[in-house]
Length: 381
Image (cartoon, helix red, strand yellow):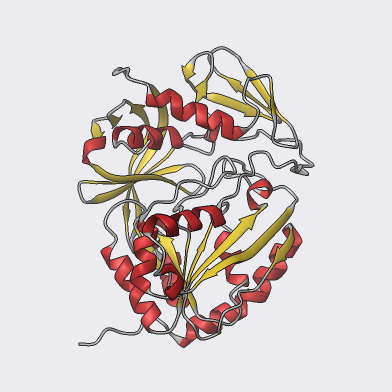
C-alpha cells in the first residue's frame, strides 16, 4: 500500500495565511532586516540556519516566499497532546530526535524533497546560551549529500541579543535574516566532506557574546535568570547562583558579577558570557569527584508522543554525580542514556531504556549542568 503524501495543499494555505501575521508581529518586536531566498521557486532545497531563539524558524520562513517547505523539529513538540495534533495537521513538521538514531526522520526528509518541497533545519540542533554559534556535527554533510538538492545557508544575527536563551524578558534590537550562500549539488560534489563542513560552519557562525551593541533593556534586568546557565563560581566551583536586576551572585561565597547593556561583565575576571561558559567547560573537563556534586528540587515526567507528558514524581530531589542522576529511588546511569539535551528554556529531556523522560525544576532551574556532565561522560565535552 502506497504511503500518503507528506506534502499537502493545506500546508501551503496555512503558510500563506500566517506569513503576514508573523512578519507584522516581528516588526513590532524588533527592527527586522531580511532578504528573500533567490532560487527557482519550484526547486526543492535544504535550508540550514544558526539557532538563537525559538522564533528563528518563523524568521527563516519569511525568506522562503511562496515555496513549499517543512521544518525539522525536535520530537518533544510532538508530545503536547492536542497542540501536537494541530501542528501535525496544519504544518506537518518532521520529528527529529536530538540524540540517537534518526533513520525515519532522514527518510521522511527524502520523501518530502521527492514530493517537491524544501527542508528547513538548524544543524546546531539547539539554541545558543552565550550568543556564539554552537557545535555543528559532521552528520549534516552526510544529510546534504543524501538529499542531493541545493544547500542554502541562512545567517541570523541579533535575535540572541533581543532574547537570550537564559533570559525571561525580551529586549529591543535589530535582527537580520539573510541567505548568505547557495551551494548547488554540482558544487558541493566537488568538495570533500571536511571542506563542505568548513563552509557550513563559517557561513552560520555568529558571536554575539560581545558585539558592541546594547541590549536596549528598559527594565535594567540584564542578568535576570542568568542562573539558568551559570553553575561554576571561580572561587567555589559548582554552586547555585541567584540573579537580580543586572547582577548575579554565588550562593556560597557571595561573589557578585554585574552585566551591562553591552553584555560585558564587571566584578569577575570574565569579560563576556562566552568567556564564563568556556571556563565552565574547562572546569568540568578536569572534574573527577565521585561524590554528589549538586542537587535541585524537580518534577519528573514520562514523555509519550501523542499522549503528552505524565507526571511521575513531584518536588523530589535530583542529585548529580559524574556518571549518573539520582531522583528518589530512580537511578539514571549516563551509560544507559542514549541522548540528553535541554529543551525549551531550562528542562532536561533524555532517552533511557527505550523511554523518554523530562525533568522540570522551576523557572530558575539550571538544566545545562546535567547535560554538560552527561556529555563529559560520553566524551562529547
